[in-house]
Amino acid sequence: MIKVDVSNVISEEEINKYAPSVKRVNQMINDKSGAGNDFLGWVDWPENYNKEEVERLLEDAKYVRENFDVLVVAGIGGSYLGARCALDALKGIRNTEKPEIIFMGQTFSPNYTAQVLEYLKGKKFAINVISKSGTTTETSIAFRLLKDLLERQVGKAEARKSIFAVTDKARGALKTLCNNEGYHTYVLPDDIGGRYSVLTPVGLFPLACAGVDVKAMLKGAQEARKEFDNADLKKNMCYRYAVSRDYMYRHNKPVEMYVTYEPQMSQISEWLKQLFGESEGKEKKGLLPTSATFSTDLHSLGQFIQDGTPLLFETILNVVNPELDVTIPSDKDDLDGLNYLAGKKLSYVNQMAYQGTLKAHEEDGGVPCNIIAIEKMDAKTLGYLFYFFMRACAMSAYLLEINPFNQPGVEIYKKNMFHLLGKKGY
Ligand code: PA5
Image (cartoon, rainbow, N blue to C red; front, side):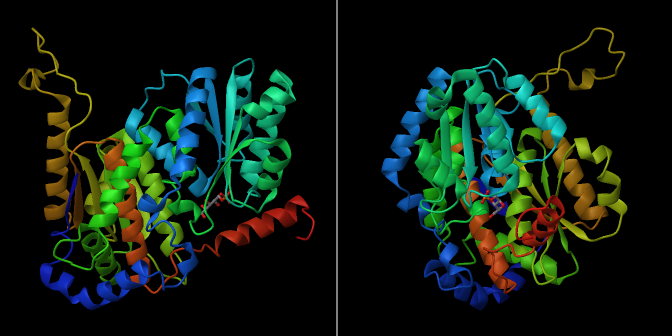
């Protein structure tokens, strides 16, 4: 489904030097013995996922598709980015099918929130609230507002049938609310953290409501799990990518730029930024993940990448065969001088832009580039890619001797904010 080329970033000789550490870390991931080992549930999840729960979730998704015009998904971070990026990657700007999916609770923005609430007035909408802790402030505020609007529009009893929650199996304020109100509830397992949860109901429920083939997505992840559970650095593309990152980090390239040539893939970069940034950025270590969408950003950041401070390397996600294509027409006057492209497809132009840019950045700019060639983007490939990156992230973080599964730094802003907001105990 994908091909990974790291040859511009690291030589085979350098890759081979990683063999002993990759073997050790792979063992730690497989037998769940490394730091944060109680959060390694995602490793075998593509095989071990709760089949009955997925069937129930699919039934409920069908009900949502048949009965509502809009599904509002409330969540943030790992409880938001996976579904958001999958939806964009697979559907782009097409949101014509019922139900329209809207996200809320990923921001405190009064403008955004007010606009969504205004839009929902009078519409037949369901709510999918997602929070592992059940106490995240952005999500909780959004849910309170949404529930209030829904109950006013359809009454308490009907609202209950229109609320679908994903949370911890036993703990948290949201779980208590679910128990009290009898909402449809799915479990985010204890041993899977937010940014590793896209293949659990966190991602599966909203995606199933959007009509995505979530079983194909799980199948893709299953294939990736089988392929990447070994330490063979000749074959294991996932670990070859992980060591290329580590090598860059140790050779004065502290910034990894995820590059796509498809705007609908730019949310995947957001998911990647969270996955790698929150997993590795600790103890004053870790690569800074950043992103760009070309050719759009070649007209903004392109100058810096080509000629600016040489601190970055690229990881390019190149979709070889786009789902849709457009042919450039001929024009009898040719005043815009484009007839040399008449009859050519935009996919061809995009690929030429990619190849020209790659050469410019690698050869003239001295920017090392990893290339991940994606045959075509579909649900199965996406599941495969999600697993590929999660496993690469665990390997990378362990190579840095970092626990990939906690996020102690995130709590500090919350404490300050709660103090300023006057929350009890802060
Ligand atoms: O990766 C993580 O653990 C975080 O980004 C969480 O997903 C995010 O903070 C939301 O947390 P919760 O699902 O508890 O609301």
